Length: 368
Image (cartoon, rainbow, N blue to C red):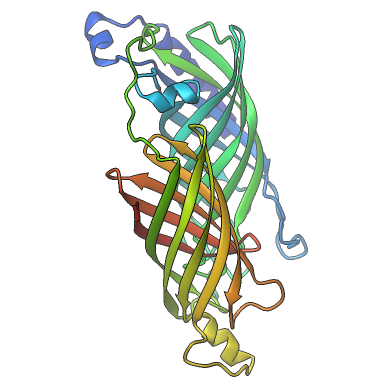
């Protein structure tokens, strides 16, 4: 009840503030439409590892606050995606369970319009950032927390949002979230903390509505129809046991993409990895290993989307040289690239094995 009361008071303050008309100075400083959003979130921790016999999962709730800037079409990619809103968010989650504690998160936000009517709208929302989780696994003080092994974690949210009264400065919001906390196996255990939420809220425009850009939009980057690339990255992970040693991992990727229109691309590639962490597992099981055992070679298919200088791509691959993974030797990777120049890009990736986080990759790449 205390959290709900706080949310209602904050909504009243937001609605009152949004009624103020912008002065000439404010209009000069705010050339694009800008919004403040507040929302209340509620939903259970999703027991994706069937741990209900060990952990007492309960519905959690939280508050989110966001500051968003609506793109105006001055860049070509903004028109392709219907003028998405971009910004920053602060979130607070209470899991209502002492083993899991609470989470404080900061993230970047992107809202992509799917339906835009005068009264009704629907967006797809994506958030990515970092979180501080108050209760982590501790072999002495909190051994029951099998989901999160570190205080600091990556924070991801995606889901649909419905907006009402689109023609007014204030809008009512409702939607659904899938929320994921994970440290990418840098600290174990890392089964992941997932929530399935509904949320309600309000969004208020700051100042008067600004017109869209009417000139010739500029291209932030021009993608060739065929793109050849090479990336090099590193990661850190624990393996086999919590509070154990950490291992350094190197990976390189080379491949080719083909653009389909202005949004989508698909391609093929090869991955070469050096991962000494799995030698501990082989040794524990008494499996003979060799000097070349930490080296893995894989081939992958990929598909992704482009947003100006930023791309998001999913790799689905299989190992052709592998001494580590039993059974089906498949892997996948989600990669975010940002083009610093036309050719040089920063690389952030999460490699998983059957959707189980293996490690986070940090690196750079070159697009030919």
